[in-house]
Image (cartoon, rainbow, N blue to C red; front, side, top):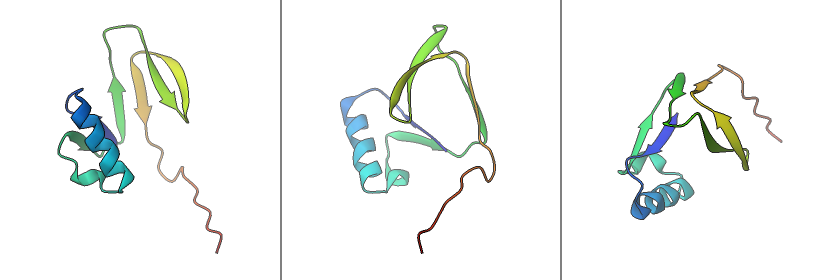
Length: 78
């Protein structure tokens, strides 16, 4: 799933944080939410910054992302 703000206003960011915090992100009106299996992200420059697992990283563009079916393993303590 790709979640992107429709603009770069503070109110949009605050709404996204509130809905994410309350686990109701699908109700946010200022976010573009799409279910995708792959995506290519282009920018005007040849690199951009992204946060991956909490770490700021410099990435070359275009960025090509693809989901892997059944790649996430969930372990239940019960």
